[in-house]
Length: 488
Ligand SMILES: [Zn+2]
Image 1 (cartoon, rainbow, N blue to C red):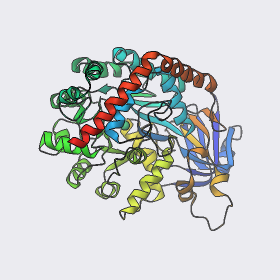
Image 2: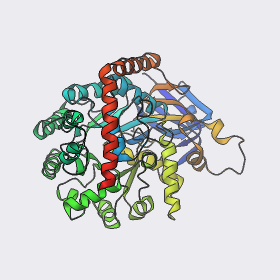
Image 3: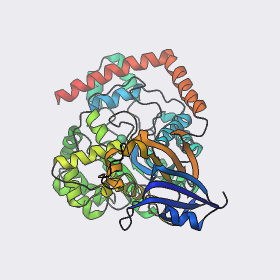
């Protein structure tokens, strides 16, 4: 790329507190970086030979950040795992075949990109434990195919695979013909030392422009206390962040309270997993005192309101988190309310939850939830999140026509209008590192080829006779798990 590129909009929403919106504005880009943001007339005069993108029919915003997702291209509902109570759902999810990890990840990244999401935290779950290392490589390759910035948190789990507590009594309660399969589901996909080495190694081979590594102990109920302790120690020594699920369901709260007797958040603090660079997904069941401690330590809570509603987990204490000054980001979690990975829709849900408890975030704060806060949690705060000189040119152009029609003169600021009305479907163009990667709402790569690859892998794997047997067995284990939960 040579010369200057100007991205113009009826409004440029910068995400910067000192200059939140520039009406009839433009962003000047040189190569992959932003060099200026200002009035369109000024920048056009300064750069008469610049190539131009956008215009009056666009609103320009920073690339969005989904700070929690799992990279499922084909969604769980599309693969036959319908929404149901969380603990049962988690077992039912085991029916989903591994697919082709690289194409499925790339397809997910494309869907995010087409929704304006240019940076993300990928919370890994293992699809095929026998291929752990290959999978890590395939996931990163999937993101490289698309160009999305990713903070990747490889999966670590070592206990409570089927229940919260010793799995053996539950397995013993199942019909004998299910014992072998159930026990097979209770094997850690990777040992602790191999895991620690893998994450530290990963940091040496990343593309510094677009990739970060985080530790990914999935959640305290799924990691033995000594494993959490070691992960926390190595992460602190290596200067690495971490990304965990935390207190997503009532049953998790009850289990962790039983196990630790003290607050699990205090426990995370003791092991070095409550600090800047650490992000905690969900936090539905957090207590007031825990919220205050998270705020004090500077860790981020990533809200996933659609997922929590879909799986019956209720709502996070959004107002209390905001009042306490906790850093908050938002994730799509492969489970947005409309099963569409619409981050702006999730931000609207967050706003509604806050207001329901008497806290009224303004439009600038809402934009920040979807951009700066996630960039910080993902380790890209110096590169993306706002539109200002020096930042990477990750830029989204929205359809201004749909958002402003019928263009009333009494309209509020474009920032307010955009945060109230914009949704994923309004994304028209996306630039990543200054390159146009989405045009007319669609990824410019081989989209049809990618969809076909995902489809073909799903078709062939689900056609295997062993798949039908797995679906049947997993369905029975999931049903038994629901009854077991009720019995506790
Ligand atoms: Zn999740």
